[in-house]
Image (cartoon, rainbow, N blue to C red; front, side, top):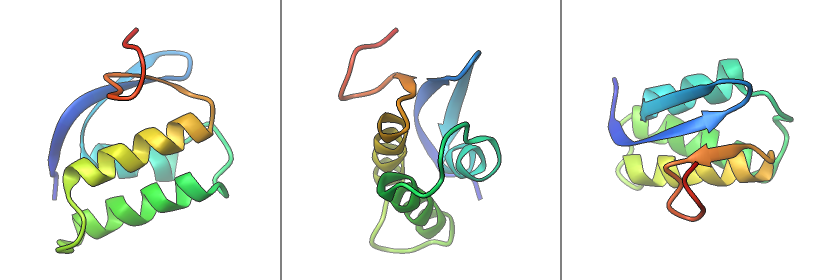
Length: 87
């Protein structure tokens, strides 16, 4: 299942564009370049999982916002971030 989001780019050497909740979850689980024990990281992973499993309480935009918080927690740059400057 691929739930579309407003695209964002995360920078860790190269920019990678993420445009679905599946992309966010894949990045968190397989490509995350930072610690994976932070509160925002764990929350982002849980929200992405809930959205992909069809949960009724979380939306794709909740997953996107949680991912951005996890990126900020890890000190990563995010373009397309509603809370900070675009690069």
